[in-house]
Amino acid sequence: MAAENVHVVAVIGAGPAGLFATRALTAQGCRVLLLNRDIKPGGLAEYGIFLNKYKMKGGLRKQFQKILTDSRVTYLGHVTVGAHGAITVPELRGLRLDALVFAHGAQGTKYLGIEGERLPGVYHAKDLVYHYNRLPPFSERDFPIGRRVAIVGVGNVMVDVANYCIHFCDCDEVIAVARRGPFEKAYDDREFEDIEEAFDGDLYRQELERIRPRLEAVGQDPDELLAALAEPESSRAAEKPDEVRTRLRFRFLAVPRRVVTEEGRVVALEIEETRLERKGDRIAAAGTSEISRIPCDTVVFAVGDRVDERIGLPYRDGLYITGSGGDEAGPYQVCDPATGAPLPGVFVVGWARRASEGVVGRARLDAETGARHVLGQLATLPRRSLADADRLIAAVTEALRSRGIAPVAYPQVQRIEAEERARAAVAKAEEFKFPSNRDMLELLRNYPGPGSDEALGSSPGSHAPTSKSSPATTP
Ligand SMILES: Cc1cc2nc3c(=O)[nH]c(=O)nc-3n(C[C@H](O)[C@H](O)[C@H](O)COP(=O)(O)OP(=O)(O)OC[C@H]3O[C@@H](n4cnc5c(N)ncnc54)[C@H](O)[C@@H]3O)c2cc1C
Image (cartoon, rainbow, N blue to C red):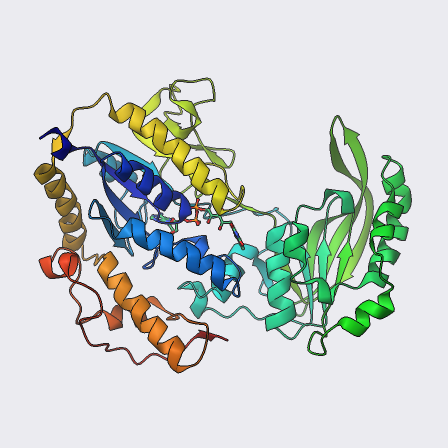
C-alpha cells in the first residue's frame, strides 16, 4: 500500500505562502501540519489586503478553505513558533518531522534609526494595517490619526494607508514622502485610482516645478508628467465627491531625519532634501544637507518590513541565511551560519524568504517553487505509514496542550467565520470580524478543540454560539 505511506511536513504560517506550499505538498501525498500564529488563517490576505477588496479576499478565502478542508492537512491556529512562542524552532526540529517549511511572513519592523520613530503618533504601516483589518491584538490598540498625516514611502502600502486616512479618518491632508522623485514611484496606477479623488493636481504641479532642476539633472522630464495631468484641476475638483475633503499631496526628494515633537505631540517630520544620481540603470538619492520640515501630527512609515529575527532561524542583514541560487539546496533551504551547510529539511518561502516582495500571486509562486525543493529532498527519505504520521501530528497537538496551549483547529475557525458572517448579515454589513482573540475563544468555549475526535471530524455550525462581543463591522 505504497500510496498510504507518506512524509510529514510542518508548515509554519498560514498566509498565502504557507497555504499554497501546503497545497503543493499535499498534492504529492504529504501530510501537513500547519501551525499559525493567528487564530484565523490567511495572513495578510485576511489582515492586510485593503478593507473594501471584498471580492479579492472572498476569492482567496475560498481557495484557502479548499486547502484547509483537505483531510491531509491539520491546521493549528493560535500557535506561535519561536523563542517566545508555544514551541521553539529547536523543539520543532527535535520532533523529527520530514521537513519544516517556514512561511511566517515578514513580521519584523524596519526601523530607519531616526529620532522620534517610536513615539506616540508615529506608526509602522504593518501595525496600522493590522489594526484597521482587525487582527488581534492590533485591533484592540488605539491608533489615533491626526489631521495631517505624513506617509513615508510611495509603494502600494502607502496607497492603502492613504486610502484608510482619506476614507476612514478625519484628515485634512495626507502627504506622501519620497526619497527619490516621481519617476521612481513604486505604487501601481490601478491601485492609485482608489485615492485619486483626493489627489491635488495643483500641489503636484507646484511640487514638480520645485524639483524640476533636480529631475532634469538626471535627464528626467517633468513635462511628461505634467502633460499626463490632462484634465484641468477645476474639472477634477468638480468630479470630487463631497465627502472626500482630504487632499493628497506628494513631497519628493526628501529623506526623513527626525520626528519633531512639542510637548510630547508630533508637530513635524524633519527631512533632508536629496538630489538624484544615476548609478547604471538605477536612480539613487543622495542627501544635500539642506534640512526642512513637513508640518504634520501623524507619521506612518510605509517602507516595507523585514523578517522576524527572533523566531530562531539563522539570520543576517534582514534575511534568513539560505543557500545561493547556484547551490543544490537553492535559495529556499536555510543554512548553518557557521559552516554554510544546508540545515536538512529546513526551508523558507514567501515573505519570510524575501520580506515585503510582491503580491499574493508572487507569494504563491515562491511557495510552489519552495515546495518543489522540499519534495526533491523528501524523495530521498523513507516514508512513514499513515498511522505513524497521524500519531506524530497528534503528539505535537498533545505536547502543545500539555503546555497549556489550546490550538484552534480548522473546524473551529469555520465556526468563528460562520458566526462572523451571521453578525455581518444582521448588521447589514459586508463583513464582521471579532475584534479580539478573547471574543473568538469565548465563542469556542463549548466547541471542542483539536485533539478531540469530535472537533477534528465534526462539521462546523452544530454548536450554539456563546459570544456576546460587540460588532466590528465593515460597511
Ligand atoms: C498593506 C498590504 C496590502 C496588500 N494588498 C495586496 C493586494 O491588494 N493584493 C495582493 O495580491 N497582495 C497584497 N499584498 C501582498 C500580500 O499580502 C503578500 O504577498 C502575501 O500575504 C505574503 O504572504 P506570506 O504567506 O508570505 O506572508 P503573510 O501573509 O504575512 O502570512 C504570514 C502568516 O504567518 C503567521 N505567522 C507569523 N509569525 C508566526 C510565528 N512566529 N509562528 C507561527 N505563525 C506565524 C501569521 O499568522 C500569518 O498567517 C498586500 C500586503 C500588504 C502589507
